[in-house]
Image (cartoon, rainbow, N blue to C red; front, side, top):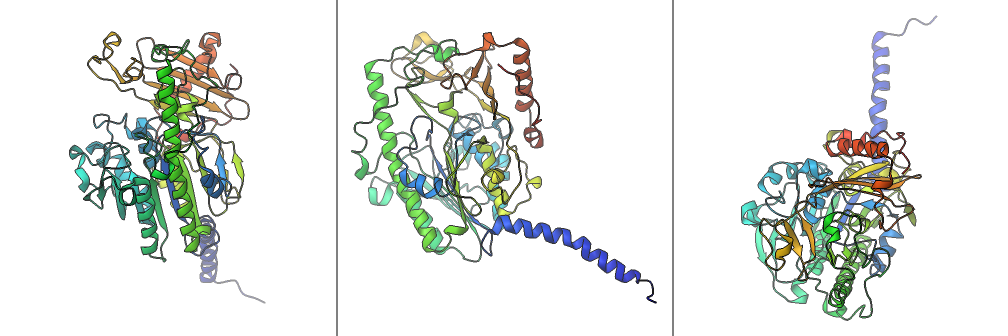
Amino acid sequence: MAGPRSTAGATRSGQRAHLATPVLLALLTCCVRCADSAKPSNIVLILTDDQDVQLGGMVPMKKTKALIGDAGATFVNAFTASPLGCPSRSSILTGRYPHNHEVKNNSLSGNCSSPLWQKGPEAEAFPIYLSKQKYQTFFAGKYLNQYGEKEAGDVAHVPPGWDQWYALVGNSQYYNYTLSVNGKEEKHSDSYEKDYLTNLIVNRSLRFLDDRSPQHPFFLMLSPPAPHSPWTAAPQYQGEFSNVKAPRDGSFNKPGKAKHWLLRQPVNPMTDSSLAFLDDAYRRRWRTLLSVDDMVEALVKKLDSIKELNNTYIFYTSDNGYHTGQFSLPIDKRQLYEFDIRIPLMVRGPGIKPNQTLQAPVLNIDLAPTILDISGVNLSSVNVDGQSFLSQMAPSLRNGTARPFFLVEYSGEGHPTTDPICPKLGPGLSQCFPDCVCEDAYNNTYACIRTLDSEHNLQYCEFADSESFVEVYNLTSDPHQLQNIVKQVDPSVLQIMNQRLIKLQSCAGNSCRDIKQRRRTPQY
């Protein structure tokens, strides 16, 4: 007759059972991080500057669409949390809404690359976590608009988490710029072979890949200036698209009826000189993108040649959209409409099936948590407002749900004095053109709830101005946002949307993600 099992044996058995759970979790994590490789997956983020998706901004990108979009997933509902460079890029780096990283605009006083930013949100940006995961990290190109200014640490300031640092000082340029190369100043001139910034970015990234340690994964962030002004194309592309014009459909050259006052002030119809100007800008933007297309091709070929392509996630996106003549505004971003807040987003990588077109809404605050999710970081330990969208593009690796609505916010910029070119408009405006059409103002400050699911396609926006102006759009019936329906909507519905907006404007971390998924959106 067998005697009773010893307590020690029972304890050891219990320990084995207890240990099985973390071992299983580790194996599942490796399935995400390692996919079909023995080491964690590499990650590449390509971030363009002002590349729209609504007005044909991806048309020149034939190689990019074939090598990333066709080889993986294209998100057709990707948005920026704020349609301006520095706030948007700060959201990408931190995974936070602007009200939490507190970068308001492109100025130092607006917290763009300021000492306050450096001591706070930048010290918690996602590259730091990648570095802790033993990733070899590389940055090249435009960082933040005020980066490298003397009041913000000059070129000696290298943000934490980066092993190799080739950052542009100031805003986008193609020639005659200064780089911070690992904290040292490097000046460039106007030689295409030596200085054209898009080419320099890819060439230095290829050198980094040659010099990397094969024992550890790598992260590359490539941030070319295209298609931002001054729209300087490579010599071989300066004659391309000579017959192309900005799209004339939708809201092009339409008056901004029943919209915020800034949209009501442009001359309509636009003058012939304005049309010629924006058509020229449109063509030149496309020409600069051809070099980015070449960059993507060179990078993919390199990853393939070093046998890393199948173990690398490649993200392609932009910081914000753009407009060329919509609602008679010449050229810029900064507005709440689809052409400015929608961005391109394509991803390829382990576990992502090719030729996917995904409808789930994704924000640029989701890039940081998605990248960290891939790297194996426990997202509960990271202070982000966004959520990983790995489950959307690779459901075999992750479970998850899409958000039904989200926040877009912007703080307007203006000058305290009257523009001498446009004295009748008074103070408080900026980005003014010679015909006194201004693209921004202090009170072009707004917050929007954008609702997008299988049943609803809506936008509700409030301005912080003396009118407390509100704009509401049903994008199912009015995709170009021509008709502000705020006066046609039941006040009780407006109250619900207002309460949602208030909650998201004050959200942080979990409260930005813990949206009641089943709360029914009222019909407009």
